[in-house]
Length: 295
Image 1 (cartoon, rainbow, N blue to C red):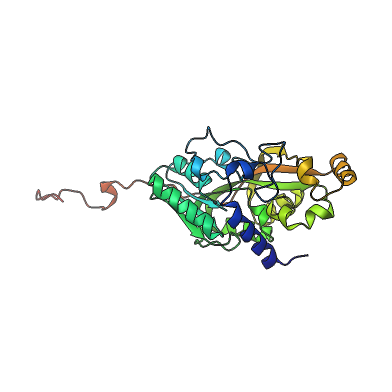
Image 2: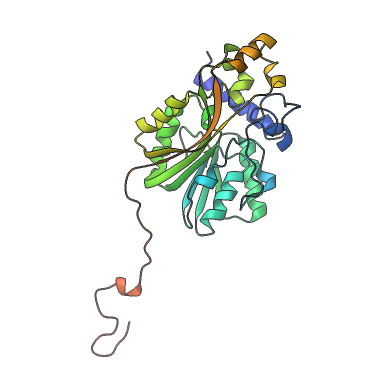
């Protein structure tokens, strides 16, 4: 079994290469990491093209859901996107927050950060920033985000409990997250579970659905619900790289399920409401004094 640092190094190397690939190649493979299928176009990703704020240059075809669609982002919110890639989910979130909000994308792959910043510059978005760092040790202060989103990224991190604890830390009391990710029901064959490409491909790093939800409970979140769930099917021409024909048939006829889920949860506490200050709030004294001198 590879160490946590070895797994992170594998993902960083793979995603540096994936950043240079096209959307079609990424979408027809497992998160861009495996050989593309010649039979299926979108293995995991959902179509963003009709989503407000969508930027085609920032869509690398690496997601497994549409978390921003379910994230209940309001004008003026501060949003953090975990594993922000070339910036697509950040730009969709920015459409919801408006110019008065703020969006922070975090990614640990330098080339992804570079692509995202170039995209933000082209769009003229001064309230969208990208920070290089690990999502299990976020380069942000505590209690600053109204909303956290992420799209098919937590499965790539070895210590998922640590990431979820970090999400709890950075959210304001009363804040919430909406995260799309890959989870399992049943056990993967060893040949898939131990392969570096399948780890970077969002499959081998996925954990059991029940364990995933339990991590969220253990971190202290409330109002947990699954907003969307869909089955993921890995095409035979990809599986054949790792499994024999007999193993493929056993894999497909067994009780294993690979799913994309979008999960919502809230950090307990009351959200501080933004209050507009009136001139009359600034002083207990009347604006005009008895002698007629006005402030």
